[in-house]
Amino acid sequence: MLNLAVRGHDVSGISKPEQLAEAIASKNIGNVQFALSASFPEWSAADKINPGMGTFFKQTFEAKHIQIALLSCYSNLIHPDAATREDILKKFEQYLFHARYFGASMVASETGSVLAELGYSEANFNDDVFDDLIEVVQRLVSVGEQHQTMVGIEAGLNHPLYSNHRIAELIERVPSPYLGIIYDPTNLITAETAAEQVSIVKEAFEMFGDKIVCLHLKDYQVEKNVIVPVPLGEGQIAYKEILSILQEKKPLCYIVLEETKDAGIERAVALLEDFH
Image 1 (cartoon, rainbow, N blue to C red):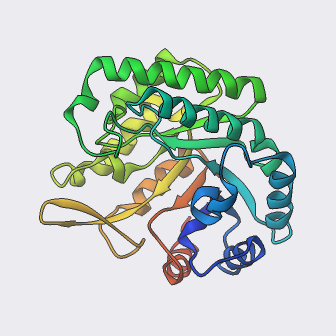
Image 2: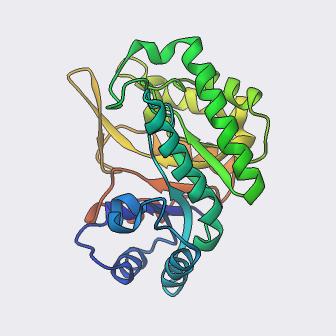
């Protein structure tokens, strides 16, 4: 049995919360990774989020038997401008406080980049930048501990958190049960290492499987030596092998279909419904 989720903003043509809940339910999906800033940006500011809003969304989704599995607050957590970073972190902290009202167990983000526009920079791989990231994650996790809400951190090749070993180091340096890892195997491969993806996933579960709280399942093609995301079932991801590892190690762990949208979600669910 697979515990599937979709990102709310991967369902298009939506203008009202009730429509989003109905659309997700119609695709035979029981969970949503919910990003206010992507689905309903007019309500996403830190000074607008409130317990009533959270309860409204929780009840709206629950009416269609949907759980808000993750509350997304994807931001540049290490933004180079100090004032901008402080605004970002305060917003994340507001999301951590209010997650309980949405019914979400975690608030999620990638780590970001030393560049304000989130572009590629080799400076992201420096130890001093990683030390900076550790301080940021420690701050957020301490707030998560206060509110009993997990901080879900996602790695990526262009970020300071760019490999299994860096993830393991983060976990070692922030030893809290309120730090969880959102693991996206496609975020951590290049065209040259794609053939090793299953081994990379096995290594991750051996190194820090107990900290993985969500798997992002993102299919891909290799085009001109670049990894290009595609809907699940249209690419090269070894999803059967990866999901077999997940089922063995973390049964019923959230699995978020990423970059699979609209009709592609229905095709993905049909592809996975016979998976055991």
